[in-house]
Length: 96
Image (cartoon, rainbow, N blue to C red):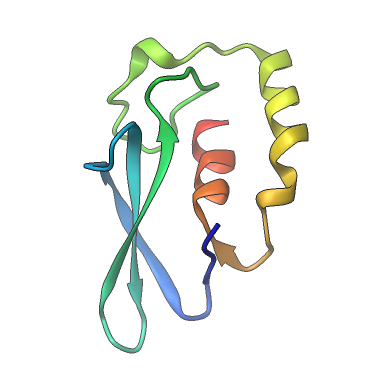
């Protein structure tokens, strides 16, 4: 998994992903160069707990099952690093 430092990048927003089977892209902008980076996250073949992106393009995939959310978070907490953006961080905070 690729990590982008929050000191070097700022979050611009979210858009529908063009990457196969991915739901959304997190759009980051490098603070020094102004270049943007897209981070695909979420898999549209599977359900998720919620959708906090504001886009809500896949309402049929929201299950609101607290036990599934708890189990997902147990499995994926290893994917998080404080101070960094990543696909895992976006999924954790926005979809689960």
